[in-house]
Image (cartoon, rainbow, N blue to C red; front, side):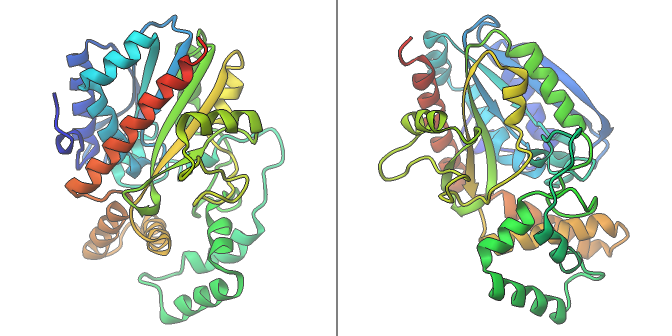
Length: 366
């Protein structure tokens, strides 16, 4: 067994070591997909994949971490706890549900304490059709010069200009313009890229090798950074499909806390483009697909946005003063990982409930 607190890790290297050890303890084979670059301390990076169950299973649950690198501290903790959770493994095994753990979808971001990939791309905005004209985010284009000023911390003038924009347009419009996804500014926030990333291609490879036998696929993608601290919002993560939404709500929703949606404005998330879930539709067309992003709150929205601005500024100014760089990195960690026992307990209990519910949903009706 592993304790709730012990399941979490302060670094990518330790998180990966715990995941690999957990797989050994559970008797699971790990397929490692080495990343071409190294971590901040020279460590090897990998998207590690383990299947708990039969490769021929018709019901498949995917549990993934670190789509947004630094958020992997949370998701990895959930996966590491699950590997040692005998009751959970018995539940899935007896139901005939195979569980596919994807540890560190974006290992480079995880290891470097960034949300983006080594290409500076938000992985969850990268799944667009690059053979077509890319979406244009006019709101972001107007904000970009203000978001990444020449100096950090921002000057009072810069802060006043952003404050005036928010006062005029509102915080929801500010969130949508910034986080919705953009393809114009390679150095900018929430950049969707101009080509598929390494993580995009590798994830698709995993789906082609591990998910072709499934006739029903559920996916819980673990995230942090939006909403009240410690509360896991269950955000519908399929295409805008009323039948799939009703199914997700039946599995994971309640009268008091229904599954939220970016399509109807009920989610803390803005309406996004280039979502990773598109790959499941494209690579696994044989399967009925039901998915949520489980999004745990950390800091208030504007504090999280401020941490992201600082991180992107630092990436563009690698020779920044060491004290400033350390402060920016610490702020990023705080924005996406609340390092308290209470928060970790909330994360595990809510994720565990969602996983049990996914098994029941997948097997309802046979």
